[in-house]
Amino acid sequence: MNPIPYHWQYLPLLIQIVVAFGLGTSMILGSRFVGRHRNSKTKLAAYECGVEAVGDARGRFSVRYYMVAMLFILFDVEAVFMMPWAVIYRKLPEITGSRFFGFWEMIVYLGFVAVGIFYIVRKGILDWSLDKADL
Amino acid sequence: MTIWWFVLWSILKVLVVTVVLLTAVAYTVLLERKVVGRIQNRWGPSRVGPFGLLQPLVDGAKLFLKEDIVPTSVYKPLYLLAPVLALGCALISIAVVPFGNPEVAPQGFRIFQISDVNIGLLVVLGITSIGVYGIALAGWSSNNKYSLMGSLRSSAQLISYELALGLSLVGVVMLAGSLNLRVIVESQAAHGLLSWNIFGGFQFVAFFIYLMAAYAETNRAPFDLPEAESELTAGYHTEYSSMKFATFFMAEYANMITVSCVATLMFFGGWTSPLGNLIGPFQNQIINAILPIFWFVLKVFFFLFLYIWVRGTLPRFRYDQLMNFGWRYLLPLAILNIVGTSLWLALKQ
Image (tube, rainbow over all chains, first blue to last red):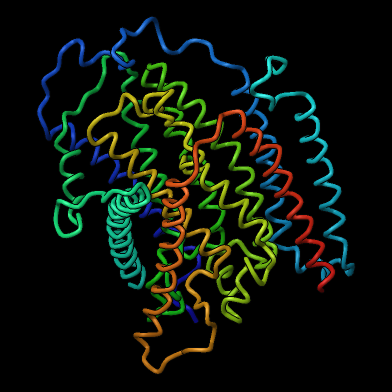
């Protein structure tokens, strides 16, 4: 028998997370103390290829980025729902007594996903180079 | 008593693996400069050390000693947090990767895998998603138009291709019936090359979807839109200098290595030998423990080389082509692959 209980396996993962972020932090901090610092007003200005920066960068940007982010949330949730099904898929015939139970279940689900994709494609959200996509 | 040994052993493993990973990152950079150099008919770095082998060390020292500039217009907390997030997330997912036969475990202490959790694949996918924050925050907090544009593009690209990436792995999960990376590899171990998921599992469509999505996920050519120099200067890390830039750079290469590891584990049988049981298992236990690592490293090296080869060969996509490709072709294709695999499995049973 394995003397290590399963839940202890999360401990090394935790250690790895601490080490990874610790390493990142120490690198950033380290370079602040090493090396010379001789600043001037021009050097600390925003770098926009030698041209003086006009205004603030945080202005308005295309709404399409926002749409993509929203679609991502929808479809990513759908993708995550598929994972438990995929894990248990080969055991489903024994559990349900039907060979195609799991398959048809997922076809119905994927059907809805496909309708969603079809809708957003027809709606023009993915037409990045056409004006009609400016919703 | 056992738990303290376990903690100590885990810390040791984490430190060794992280150091090896960082060294691998440094030498992947050298490999890339060498190979791209040869593709473009020049030598690449050849002056520092024999064959330029000491170049990564010199580069690292140079970047560390460079002046650390924090521009006046940035939002400091997030500006400093972004590179830490990027590098941290890039280094975490190696923890669940089994890079040798995990059966080699004297008294239950596994040697070749840091953390054998049942949700291994989900950890990798989840941590990769968090990596987007590093890029998004870097662009926003820099208060630079190029940075903001680059990070917006990059975030949109990453989240679009993440869907295809996640869905392409569902077929493999179905075949193995588990999210545990060790179990996934063991499900491909039976007949060597022939039982790898790419051949035996008929997952080659999934593999190509994964490969393309992975190139986009790591911001590599031909999907390196976020740092399209000719239009965006340097993209989201325009305002980052010195070690902060190096952190982003290392994060990119660490992500490449992680992605190559996952490709190896999911489609190419991980540490298993392509010859199956034709040669081995050997009498010598040390060879039995070392040989899987050799195969694993060889496969990962192949994927890293492929990355560089593709970079040296293909031109960059246009942005609308990129988004079109991800949503209109890769995503439906990944869904079709799931349908096909599930139908095949249902008929086979």
